[in-house]
Image (cartoon, rainbow, N blue to C red):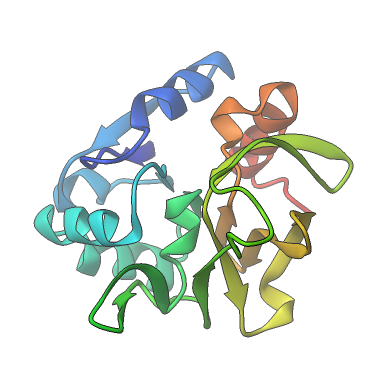
Length: 195
């Protein structure tokens, strides 16, 4: 069963609607037991890195996520903030010079766009690969390993718009709000047909 993590700051209902539109079934996961029979796991993203990590801790999901994704290799898709927390640290919610600790499944950090050069958040459509997708982000990931970069976009400079490693996928853009292109990408992920 496709499982969508429904945490406080997430965007789970919109992702569920997109999956139902594709003719597939999915359920919300609110706790560790809700992920036990997951065939796919999606972590939607709205809000900050710290709020997302705090919610995952409160829901007691960190251990089960590590088990399912890193050890059992269940396909995982992180969307927007859900992609950013795949990395080690985020400058978002930096307290006293200490960055927010994230999942650390991918090496690298998340940094803020230069507000002297661009307006934040980046809000609207931007090109990745040969299609346009919908972004709402003030921060972006800087992967340490270039092999983890799956797709890039430009916002006064190139940045990682999508990442992947084995069964772990992340999109900085909102697939569920990106029209036909987003639905095609989401369907490919669910079918295991991403190349």
